[in-house]
Image 1 (cartoon, helix red, strand yellow):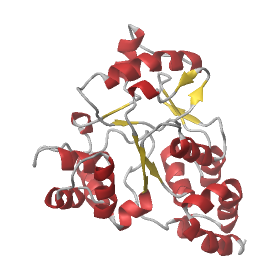
Image 2 (tube, one colour; image 1 turned 135 degrees about the vertical axis):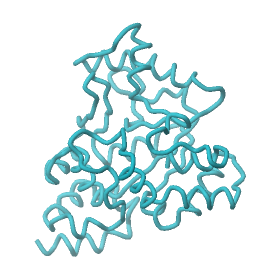
Image 3 (cartoon, rainbow, N blue to C red; image 1 turned 180 degrees about the vertical axis):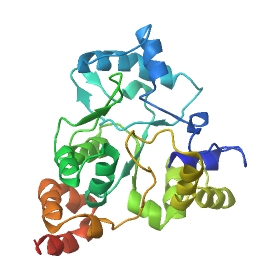
Image 4 (tube, rainbow, N blue to C red; image 1 turned 90 degrees about the vertical axis):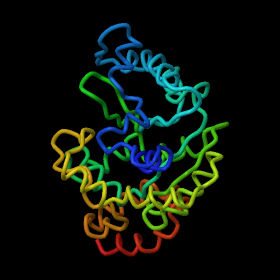
Length: 268
């Protein structure tokens, strides 16, 4: 999504490759912003200290460009230990990308260098966090809580994008997003952006140049990028676990998956 938006909004031929997305956007785990907000090198084992410094870091990020700009986050949009993880006063709105948890589980396992059952455990754990070696954290929590937090946050303008829809009908999905951003879609620009940022195009970039955001221990970041890989990657018991854990949220956001996953889980 970040690369696609860069290709759409930046002049033709100037959009960054996957290793230079900072030219267009940034993320809320940038060490340099935490160092600046801390008044010196930031490193901590304390969640409370991360939260305290995060408030200043986010305001610095918001002020790096005039007007609005895109910032990637994995955090929930919640009030946590006395702090807004996504402060409303510096947040214009949200593009929230959701992926079905059956395909997410094997992808998350690869991202965490863990087995799939461990990944599912973490997806079901309200206290799940990821982070950098210096203690800059991503407060993930449970998959269903994450979805609920972002899709019901009061007063937050949002555009919810299902990953599966972006794969199946990218132009229509992004056109809806541009309308949310109050940008009149340009069909030619949109077509070029979609073509330049297919999963295969991104995968080829990683094969040629590597990917700086790839977690340590992961062989390749861009692996399959498909919808429906759960049929090959998950056991019936694992599908059953995910259904049981997240049923109400699945019924809301992925009703078309309910019958097939129930039948699949029933073969355990």
